[in-house]
Image (tube, helix red, strand yellow):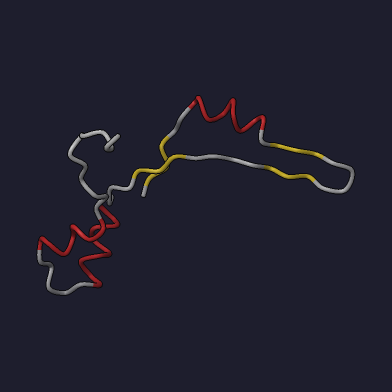
Amino acid sequence: MKLLENSSFEAINSQLTVETGDAHIIGRIESYSCKMAGDDKHMFKQFCQEGQPHVLEALSPPQTSGLSPSR
């Protein structure tokens, strides 16, 4: 996974920090890619000695057909 920079989230994140009398809560939202990066693929292949191509699909996000949900 890789952190994706998103400037829109920074404005929201500034609103998610709350200070009360005895507590300081820092809230954040972040976006990450779900695609395996080079290091992730290498580590996965080390764990799975077969290295069969269809095995890597287990860590990929599901493919959508682009259709909207039924109404």
